[in-house]
Length: 596
Image (cartoon, rainbow, N blue to C red; front, side, top):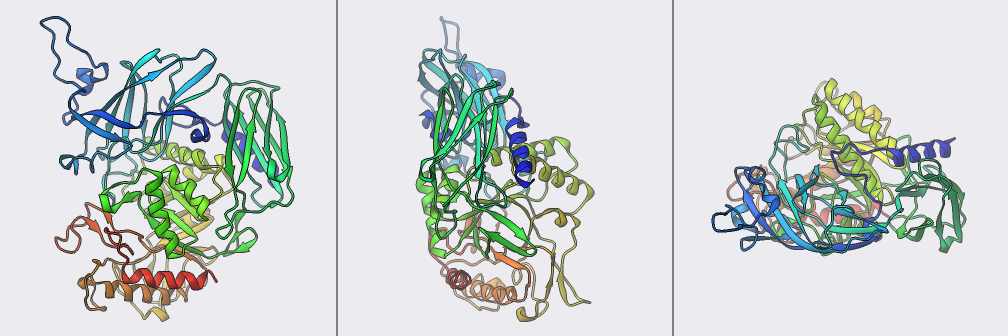
């Protein structure tokens, strides 16, 4: 019955339409497709007063005759790198929140027997896309991909692509008006022109059954509703080939018993070459297989309990004060995490680049991915709820075949209310309609010390709906110690696995000071704070993971101290210049002991 239920969910997911505006359902594994990069230098116009639409910048009109003129031109002016944020490319745009128009020409050769799509890996935060002077799609959400078909819209030869980008914060945005990281704007990830056969494999989901280690489940969706077509999923190394027949909706599914399957784990991150084939299309990629589940207060990976030795980082390269966007950027972030000795990474607080996800999988990291439901969200607004469901769907659909993803995170530091509970419940329902093979988690900052009972407690009825509960608690920084760390008794969701998803404090690299005085901003204070927290962790009976905040110092407009912060959140174990602080070594030793 478990497998049949999973297949039903799988097919429901393949049939579901994401709640986006004009953008279309995502093609699975676009990086494994025939594609042409549209990255590079794009022309740009900064539109401070949002006059571009009125002036029809997207038409890129040229003067004709003696009396014509236009008060704009893309050529001969500002040029910006794509992918990349505009804040780090021009000092005048460092704090800019508003509209920038991007434009470029590209060559195309339309094919009668093929289809073509424009694919944007991410644009921050809102955008409208115009091709050859015509509006073709729009998208909201700065960390998930979208695509639009342009088969009938391309010119033979020269084409003119314009993207209107706006990163202005608003109450109905996700994240909303205030958040503790830099509000980078721009076309921040890859742009591709993707070509497929006329009838192609739109989506596939190949994973182990939720609980069984020898049942492989495959679901495939064709781009057209076409019954009776044979599709197959094969893994040559396992000598496995599943042949399926599509139904009237162009969907097919199958379950196969597999033998001698080596499951993926942090110690042995095994991936298999998988081929998905139809009569007109063939897709290849590497996929790993694992089981992850909760039993009582334990988290099990491949039938064995595991302790999550985790760390978080933002999608930022601190040394250049800019958004991470490339494989090289992913390698820098992930190799520092590897040196720390973690087996999990919380990709905070938004879906990060696909390069990071795929490289993390190959390096053996379990991933916690989340959408930016970070404080200040208008939970009573139905439009905001719909956008959150869209972001969650786009995140899951992009990475549903990445076995490294063990957790889907739906919220961080939200306050209980009827509206909040209904909002988050709708996210859980939307997520589980797409994927039930992962654990669902949220992080809370509601733990308090009950003076009367001398216990740390938390009251939030929504935790009952989650697989794993996570807590952000900054003992020794935002919260003074009410008792000695060794005497800290926790009674927090005692029937579920608990992860301390954030803890720590700030320190300026190279600054020495009193280890007992927080305002020293010293490495010694941060080091002692970590040692104290580790002592407290030993008193938490259902603790199944810890994730210090954060791997690197990161930029934040929240941070005003003129000498110790200078616009940086200094909680990093590694400084903005890439130097390891004393607390880094404390966590490395702790993780080494936990992983033995």
